[in-house]
Image (cartoon, rainbow, N blue to C red; front, side):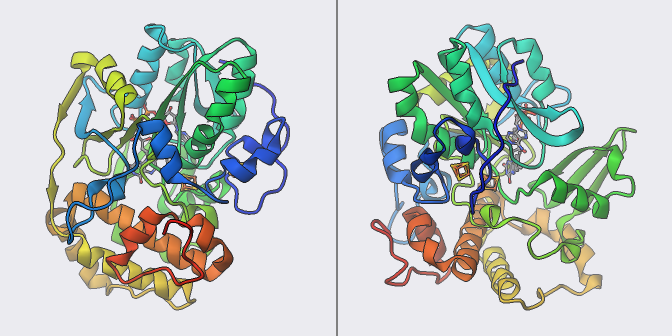
Length: 411
Ligand SMILES: Cc1cc2nc3c(=O)[nH]c(=O)nc-3n(C[C@H](O)[C@H](O)[C@H](O)COP(=O)(O)OP(=O)(O)OC[C@H]3O[C@@H](n4cnc5c(N)ncnc54)[C@H](O)[C@@H]3O)c2cc1C
Ligand code: SF4
Ligand code: SF4
């Protein structure tokens, strides 16, 4: 594994340190940043050959408005699952197969920082056996994109990148320059969805609230059945219903503005997105283009898959969420459920709440509303350039529309 030394990150205002600011030409942030003036339509066209389909019919949004351009979606598991993976390890196995079959020269991804297992550290991996050190989820962000040019300088011209949406946006924006000027001949992008990320330091504060011995926690996941699952090194597994999480004890700025106003939850510029939200307890694949199809085929019979299903109705849940975000963004206390009702609602949500694809639609729509509400409140002047048309389409179902000043060129 190669871990090139990187310069310190210069100050940027809305920034998740994706790595562009640490390259030889940090001025490229202006055109490569998800938080400055993203152009999803143009990048979708270049990468997938078309933009997302806006409407299924006059009443209904097309699933591509929620999830980005795709050919098909799957509910899937790797069998047997990879030990130490976040879910069943589809992401890691794909990267292993890419290296073992000689499809790429290197995979750029995250491992754990040697001093803090929760802190992501970007690495260039050339041997598939090293990928076992990259499995699992870390909380926080680190300069993944800054490793692309050093990899190209080492003669690694065919690359795979595993990244979260803000990193993938920057990589896709810089891809033509890498091809033109740095010798990149192939870029395979495996995207993971991302939302509600925060700094690793802040994540440790959260762990201290939910676990009696935070240093023993080795795994944490927000599952699609409305529970957080926590595993410890002693082998204990705890499942806490979302409604019982001590969210009110977190400071208002616990989630940085970047992660409250992020506009691409499902990583729409990847070739293949590997998540779980639409998977009903399994993983969820969004196959976006031919490269994505080729990735899926690399898994062969180790992939058990089926068409994803959908149940329940998201509208009430999304409406309630938006009301609460509006209250908290305005400094008012959240409308809380009485304590005695919480166990009952926690029991009911996985059974009658939105499930499968409807759960994923609900989460994407909630995130879109959160983006508009928080950005309007904290950085109103950025709304026009930062909120893409698909986000406005998602929130208009709930009465949020751009004002004349907020309307970007394509909104
Ligand atoms: C902060 C965060 C929030 C997420 N939120 C959601 C969500 O809301 N909905 C959803 O469906 N999925 C979400 N995911 C993705 C999900 O947790 C799994 O990573 C994904 O489903 C892949 O599972 P796997 O078993 O195939 O991964 P594994 O085989 O275990 O591989 C995981 C890969 O992710 C990389 N990785 C881990 N942490 C980071 C990080 N902080 N930054 C960049 N790369 C990282 C690893 O290096 C590794 O390559 C989130 C991931 C992260 C990091
Ligand atoms: S997120 Fe990346 S592109 Fe955006 S300002 Fe930070 S380093 Fe630059
Ligand atoms: S939530 Fe969005 S901005 Fe924050 S780390 Fe994830 S992809 Fe980046």
